[in-house]
Image (cartoon, rainbow, N blue to C red):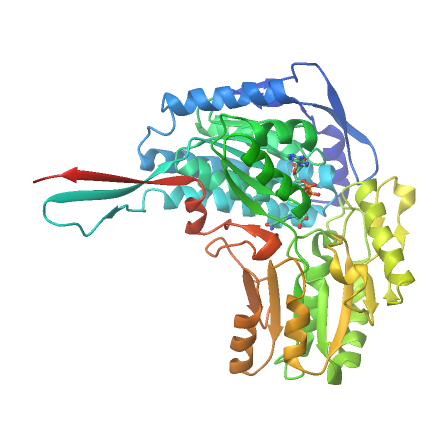
Length: 495
Ligand code: NAD
């Protein structure tokens, strides 16, 4: 498909910003809306329903009714499996439309929304659908006089609150395992990227997921999000977003009904490159490619690069040679690899971090500027700071933008200590030819995932989540089912 065609299709695309409750598109009960602005060019795409407590209540009531009459939970796992697989197939049939929605809504290049986000979401939904009729429960080793069954049951009504950086993918990581095991779901997408989630709900209905089972309620965090987290009839909340809001969500659960809370939060991931790295060019490509992918708006982006001093100069020279490849471009151009920052607020936040890095004495070696402002959208150059000190703000806080901070080290233990000296613990990497060093470093790093001699290799089969203030619980893999099920013991007297 040519670039012109993406622009033509964008011009023809119809948007619907209404909520999706009980199988129907509905306006917010107050009639209020908010503007959905495209970061690609700053144009308004559509009015989106500004849902609040009363709309959340309607969605939760619909979800509860669907759960109680077992229209979905009561189906055989094999039947839910077939429906989930159809849902995944339909997503792929709508691949171009969904990719375009995602790109227009949050600014990522069409190249990636089409090759990563839509197929990733479809694969996730298919995988959990396929898994659900292959999981067995347990029988406890009791005396002959009893039979004790340990079974998993859906928790009931699951709320999912997700961010804007991978809107469809983050939503699918929650809704797929939750739906597969028979829960009803109320999803609140980010106010910055609500459109693909709303289409997902329509497609789910078309696939055969009954009305009321999957509801999507757009709105602001402090209106719709808090109402969902405080709701007395929500059994569990799966949250992905900032650590600040994750803490609030846990408080809301404590203030209301002690709903189960699972959080996938921020990161400040360290990437440690030793002088005995087996492939320096691959390490450079990964260091640069992974921080600039998705405009740096990835929770697991390796934003802190620790390089052994003996190879640091060479490493930085190679990195600087690659940086121009990530020049921001038109997200609807298929050759673009770095698109727009999600909105002006996020762009200004990232520019503020860059200013603080300069003010605190880090050495700016590349980027640092807003670009393409004539487009009306929000773009920042890929940025690289050297000589970063661990006390600087850019070293401590999550920037969530295309900014790489480089540190030197001479002793690996010193690098590990510095890598761990953060409130976050999402991911890390180590590059070395020495398996013993690799293994010891992986053990010492307090994070949910350690990459060895690569950065982004990953698939749905492995858990994703963090230690410390990067959250609790895990998305992806069979472990995600733990979040959306309760364990029940049934002790049967057979004396
Ligand atoms: P955010 O915390 O601002 O918002 C996330 C969601 O929470 C949005 O839907 C928002 O509307 C809602 N929200 C905001 N305030 C709320 C409140 N008071 N009550 C209930 N809901 C509320 O985060 P963001 O800016 O959308 O996303 C970026 C963050 O997400 C980064 O910190 C990033 O690291 C994190 N993230 C983590 C993962 C992971 O898997 N660990 C994945 C992607 C993003």
